[in-house]
Image (cartoon, rainbow, N blue to C red; front, side):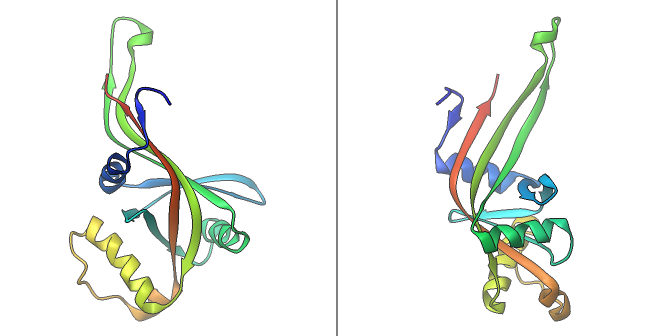
Length: 155
């Protein structure tokens, strides 16, 4: 493993906890597909939500039904590096690359618990009410992360 790459799960959790969004990598009949999503990480599981319609939902549900892996990435602490020579330009960052198996969360109580994980991350609280009609139309997915490494490019 490269010296700036770690599989330390505390580092992975810190980055995923601070990332504004996660880029989800899927594959469908049209080929590879990458899409940014709101996501929250807790206890080795990455939670996200979607409409039940559209390419993202269809690719996620296909991955769930076929047991195929999905991948994701996230980055925080991005800072541009500059210099007098072209090779000195670039970015410093902390990032995560990971993958796992996705499952749809269906029982209402489990769906609300997963959505509350997202609300704690983005709203700082999980006591807001849910519109039942919207909740019924929402696909909630849990990715059991079984591979994740962090890259710490700090210089």
